[in-house]
Amino acid sequence: MPTIPATDEISDRATAALERCGADRPAEITATGQLFARTPITGGSLLPLARAADSDVDHAVSAAHQAFRSTWQHTPAPERGALVRRLGELLREHKYDLADLVTIEAGKIRSEAAGEVQEMIDICDFALGLSRQLYGRTMASERPGHRLMETWHPLGVVGVITAFNFPVAVWAWNTAVALVCGDTVVWKPSELTPLTALACDALLSRAASDVGAPADVHRLVLGEREVAERLVDDPRVALVSATGSVRMGRQVGPRVASRLGRCLLELGGNNAAVVTSSADLDLAVRGTVFAAAGTAGQRCTSLRRLIVHEDVADALVGRIVDAYGQLRIGDPFDEDTLVGPLVGEQALTAMRNALARATADGGTVLVGGSRCLEKEAPDAYYAEPAVVRMPAQTEIVREETFAPILYVMTYRTFDEAIELHNGVSQGLSSAVFTRDQREAERFLSLSDCGIVNVNIGTSGAEIGGAFGGEKDTGGGRESGSDAWKAYMRRATNTVNYSEELPLAQGVRFL
Ligand code: UN1
Image (cartoon, rainbow, N blue to C red; front, side, top):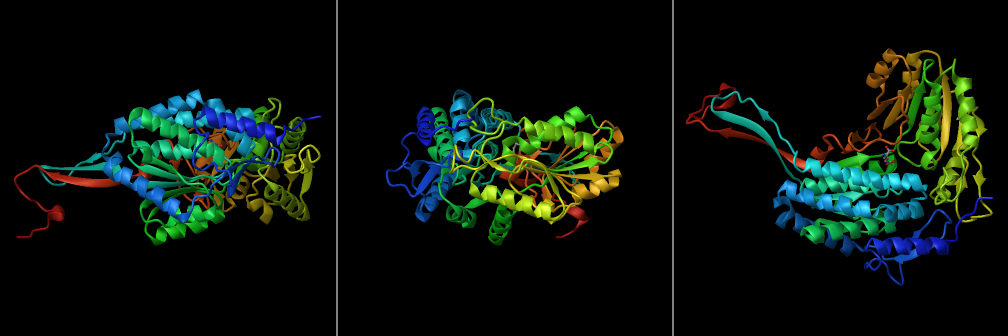
């Protein structure tokens, strides 16, 4: 019988991890507390915290703005890189402390929590290299004795709003890159993961003090929606980088646009994999099960739709259902567990409602879908990942339900597969499993997502590429490649080193 640890035990573990990260006594941890850190492992409360008041948010933005103007934007980029190098060292040292906090607050299994911290370390390495590679281009001028070039400059304060499901990696993608770009950061983490945020903030403060960077290059503000709104509306916040639901993005986008600020949105996905008749089914099974059931289906890259060629559908689905039968659900700290808890009751309700709608649409639940461990953890929400065979891509399939439900549909021609694939409003991640190069190439160009994979699942992207998606996913790109450009302002420069003043386009004047 799987056991679930007691809340007190988890609380002690959280306190010890915070202490090791140097975040044991920040002002946010109070005796009275208006916010409570919680754990989805038991559903219990951990530590009392203070919510940022409007004036705290204003103060945090002022401090970050001042640090930007007076120091950070003028600090040479390679020197700014030294800060993320130190952060990367501290993250290596505290990898398992942070992973503990991620498991405690997001419910991720050990290996995925450690993987998330590794993603932070990786982006620090990337950003360190980037600090010497903020390249601009030179262009041929049409005028003699003239040079045309573009240069990149720090932007200002970046407001980073993150979601519960990647409580540390997404912060690190934004923060490590923003810092080397010369920006300062104000972070509003999910209200569900304040302790991981306190630990990250403490490690970054230590890194700043170790390398002599201003303490206010980074400020943390804890709270709910009102805190985020204050950041969104503050004209001193040059870029708002927000991760969350499409609904949230539809509110943030227009508000930032109305003050002509910049926005980087990374919103919901409804990711699909196409499995063709030539696919290596071993790969398809493993890729599918990790992407659909891993992280209890709570990644924005989680696989939600499987579009399978009718010739291989029964064989593939049979193997996936068998694999689901092996998934151990329970305490995410237990090394044998593969599926931890859902983040809360709402997620279970959403899962149940989606399954009911799918069945009403003619779908058949092949495996999973029930709540489990209710006796052992009555205030927590564990659920068996579900696979549902659907006769068609109905409305519920086109919605993103942030829970482990995999809808399976079949197709006959590749064109049909692409049509089903692109027939949703979201456009984050996609995959094809095939051994046919023509199918692979066609998928690479026809999938309308920001991430398009061949023979691997939809989740688990590396930091080196740009991360984000199209359509309702919001269009933003974070992390690797040239995503840094969103965190800087570009200047086009024309330098005249001649003794004449020729005008462009052959214009004559005076
Ligand atoms: C997210 O779920 O918001 O590609 C981010 C992945 C991870 C990041 C997911 N590297 O699944």
